Length: 389
Ligand SMILES: Cc1ncc(COP(=O)(O)O)c(C=O)c1O
Image (tube, rainbow, N blue to C red):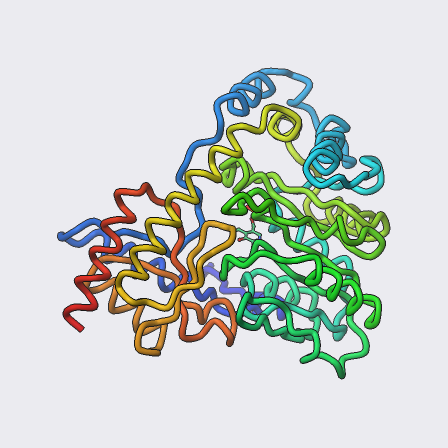
């Protein structure tokens, strides 16, 4: 018998080719060649370890046979209570942990559940441009129509006037602190989002993945401080506590949206390891000083990169949050080509803005997921590159 070849289903065939896949293969190829080590700032994969008290909690919980059995679909009360506690303490928002909180394997899964539980095939989903690429994947899997919402300069805030003629949508997605630009939202941003959502009948889904990462003493604003009536906010432990590999995220807000997300989750993804849930509860309810220390580390790194790029005369948007720096390609060139040359000639990998949508073109994103010494070396290599070109 010969090995059969199967064509994936239409919903999988319709997914765009992974923009980053080819770049990752190229980074791996160049890294294996002799020469200087690759400085890869193209990703948002936190380099710092998870705080020890959270690791210790996980070790305890893994050893407890209670966690070796199937967990309940509802999510552990301990972690849902801890989410409600964080919202109360950090944002002054009161939530019912039974009906207004759901937990997921990372915010990627939470956002997927939000879009797939809200959007019917052919319905409209409004996505920020530039924006985090998985929003498009989620809308594509839902077979929804994507309406891009421009984030305009200065400040990379949504231009709702550009969608004046749109009358109906199922979901509006925004993300602040913003990946890729590093911008923070103001109250006006979320007030605009809520009135747009009301007018079009949409649910407002706010991706708050970088909730803790605000610089210069600014605590990023939760969209739930502006509205809980048609808003759901999705968060993650990946960045706040350097727990990207643990896969833990959560959603909070409007109970009917949360209910739809949970229902989708139960069918599509089943349940979550109890030990991870208990360790997440410790992260959220325990001492937050390690999370604050992380913000200081990223702020120092931001300062190294921003000052360095400014000294080279580059046009940098000074990030107000996240761990990304968004930069216009010097001389106005093509970002994909610029990034390819940087990789080849300097062994520096940056993310071309094209991967974040049409408005990302002409920009590159630099991730602050390396120590300060490597970031100093990054600037030196960029300097050398510019002198030669
Ligand atoms: C804006 C944004 N949202 C969501 C995610 C997904 O994070 P996770 O699935 O680790 O929670 C990321 C990860 O980089 C992100 O940058």
